[in-house]
Image (cartoon, rainbow, N blue to C red; front, side, top):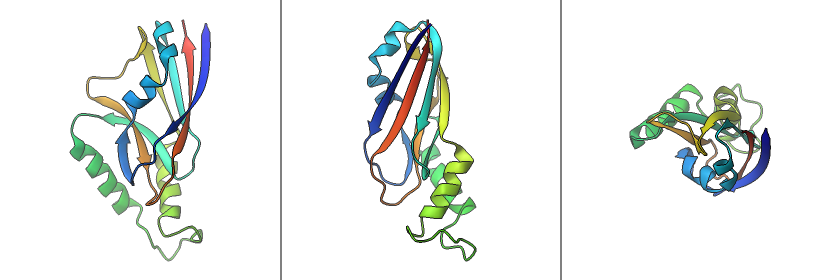
Length: 140
């Protein structure tokens, strides 16, 4: 079984849900050596998250952002963690709900996602910097 691990620095993006599947695959030439395996993608941040969902219609990404903003609003009187801005605590909550990692099957040197699936970087801060993901590949 082969193992490979790599940190990938993602470009800074605006708040919202951004497809990063192609960007990640492009940084992993080692994928080509795996016929059957798994890719574990972990984000090293507490105010951004990862998820897998529809990658065809951009309105899905807009609806995700709208829904999460409604579900986890800013400027709530019960928030105590407020020193880093009104978007910070809601960003932590959104990241906790969505999660810090996804696992993707690898088949014949490529991510084996569904026809309409993609990996999203979910950026929950208004003015975020570049984000880092750790990708661990395992397989034969």
